[in-house]
Amino acid sequence: MPASALPASIPAADLAGDDQRHLQAALDLAQAARPICPPNPAVGCVIVSAAGRVLASGHTQATGGPHAEAVALRDAAARGVTLEGSTAYVTLEPCSHFGRTPPCADALVAAGIVRVVVALRDPNPLVGGQGLQRLRAAGIRVDLLDEAHPLALQARELNLGFLSRILRKRPWVRLKVAASLDGLTALPDGRSQWITGPEARADGHALRARAGAVLTGIGTALADDPQLTARGVDAPRQPLRVLLDSRLRLPDGARLLAAPQELRIYAADAGTPRALALRERGVAVVAAPGQGGRLDLAAVMADLAGAALVNELHVEAGAELNGALIAAGLVDEYLVYLAPKLLGQGRGMWQLPVPAGLDQAPTLGWVDVRPVGADLRLLLREPGRAHF
Image (cartoon, one colour):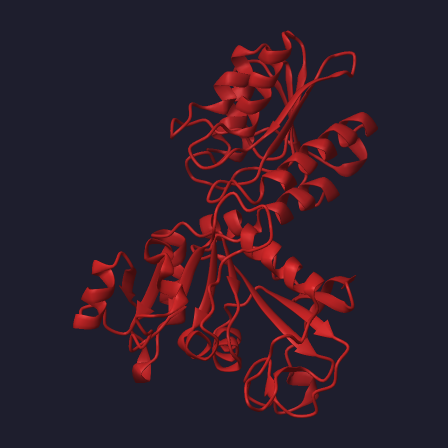
């Protein structure tokens, strides 16, 4: 679609205060949708009368359920209010295609809405400006925020996983570690329970619940026998569990096999008797052979995005796999829970080559720093990492 056919974007200075307030309310609704909607994007919608009264609102439901606009329209119908002449504030461009649900753009037109304020264009090729164009063709005024607008950036941040899967063909990867003040994740003998306090652990489980998948390596699986589930949180769904196990060494009694249909294992060879036995139990075993008996990490990410439809990948692994992901350029953000403890000696957060000089050391930027109980939660990214 030619750029001239699309509505012009509007800068921050040209968006009225009431518009910003209503769009922020829609963004708050989108935030509430994040744990339930993957692989769909998290979207919020607020519909306001010409007099400025909020008439209806909604956010994306679980996969296969209604989109935010449809939920808001149902809310209006339940309230018995008419939407003729109203404005819809939507955090992502309304869809224009038939999928599991009908096009939201058509529903907004049919409702008599006269203006739509959109925070972010949808890069999905099934939409890609067509939703905006369909609204405009129906005579609806469309205001699309400039990409640099603070509310547009907020909308983008809410859906980095979805955007990454669509534009980069791989998930947004968050690497999580819990460490002592001197950067150690365990004592020399491997004991690590617990370095951080219960509040930090609960916070980590909440982020697991938001992710489409949680990944670890066979070293961690053998040492800790993890479940990789989200526990102690109101999680409407459990994330897919992903194991990198090149030689399929996971024992039959491992807790990861308690729910085999929710486990995806990447191996160097997916045609071995062990692979076939795991498949018979319901496990998805996928070949991703790399060099030297290792796995092709880029191929793993591509498969997670393409076949498994994972938007956001939460990694909890050991130093070797952490370092391999960093070296491959596959880590998008670092989530570090830092405990006020000193271990002296033990296992580090990641294994990386020593840079030739300090000026060549990878440098991260601070995204968020906050206390969580007695610990400190750090969120870091390479500068510009979220721009793609």
